Image 1: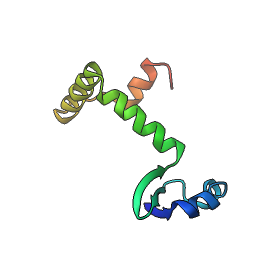
Image 2 (image 1 turned 135 degrees about the vertical axis):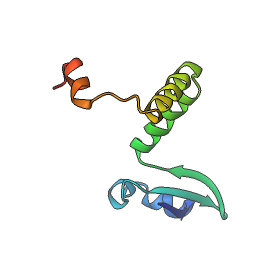
Image 3 (image 1 turned 120 degrees about the vertical axis):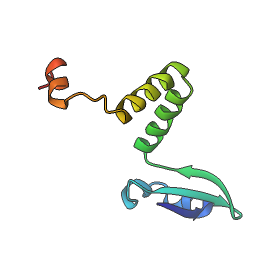
Length: 89
């Protein structure tokens, strides 16, 4: 959920935001009614940057697209067998 907050309020509340917000929320900080900043949980930021890294790497995108195509065509592996093979079981 995106919440809007004027920059003057954000300035006053910055120390309390990590405790007072649901960690799924994003805050759109506005100045004179214009969106100027986004405050978001660190995990969301990391997920976005990781996604951008993958999307900007043609090799990784090809691998992702191949995996999606294999999944859609029914070429899947048994999860328990994969865990055993990787010695995670």
